Image (cartoon, rainbow, N blue to C red; front, side):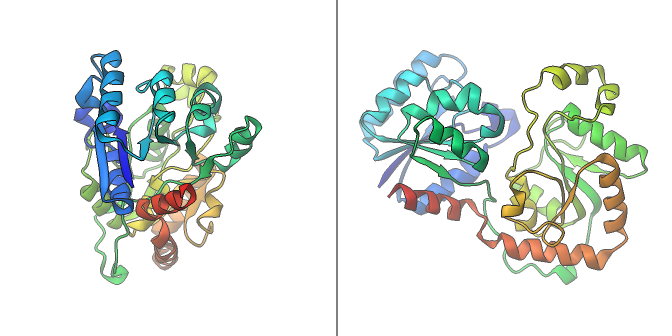
Length: 330
C-alpha cells in the first residue's frame, strides 16, 4: 500500500514555530502502516507564495508516484476543492478533520462530500455526516506520539510545582493572570510566553517533572470576568466561533509521558479517562484554584491519579490510532 501525504512540515506552516504534528506524529505513525509513505510538504511547493502552483505540484506528484491513498490534514484552502475532486476520481483520498466541534458548518461540510473517507475526532458530529449522506466517516481521536515506558514514579525529582505548555492567547493569559494573583507561580512554555517554545523532548520532560500539568481551555470563555481582563477579549467574546470545548492531543500527551493532568472539562473526555481516577478536571476559575491547592498538598492522591492515567494511556498513541483507521479503510 503506497500512501502519499500532503502535510505541512512546520506548525501552521511557519518555520519559526518548529516542526508540525503532521511531521513528528502522523508521518511516523503512517510509516508503521506502510513501508511506502511519500511525503509531499506543502511549504516546499508554493504554500505561501503561489497557491495555484501548489495545486499543480500536488497533481504532478500524485501522477508521478501513483499512490493508493492520499492522506490530508487540511486547515483551510491550502488544497482546493477542485484539486481534491480531481484526486478522488483516481485515488483513495482521506482527511483528518481536526475541529469539527466548531468548524463543521463552515469547513467540513464542503470538503467531506468530495473525499473517499473522512476522519473526525468529534463523536457529536457523526450525525451531521450521516444527515448529509456521508457514510465513509471514521471516528478516531488525538493521541501522543509515543508511550514513555517503565517510568519509576517513586524516583521522580520535580522541577516545577505547576506548569503549562501551549500557545499564549487571551483566554489562557486570563486564566494564568487569575492564578498569579492567587499567589501561584505557573511556569508557562510555548509561543507568546516568556519561556518560549520547547522541543518535543523538552515538553515530555516538563510533563514528567511537574507536580501539576495544567491543560487550559483554548475556547472563548463564557465567564463575564473575561471581558474585564483585556479590551482584546471583547471581540472574541461576542464574535468568536470557537465556543465549544474539544479534546486535544494534550489530553493524551500529559499522562502518556507520566504527568499529572489537571484539565478543563471537555465533552467526551470520559470515554477515554475516568474522571477523578485517571485525570482531574476543573469547571471554573475558583474550582481550578481549589484543586491546585489540594493536589499540591496531597502528594499521595496526586501520585495515584498520575499512575492510573499513565497506565490507561498505553493504547493512546498515533501509531495505534492510525492502524485502527486503516483497518476500517481496508
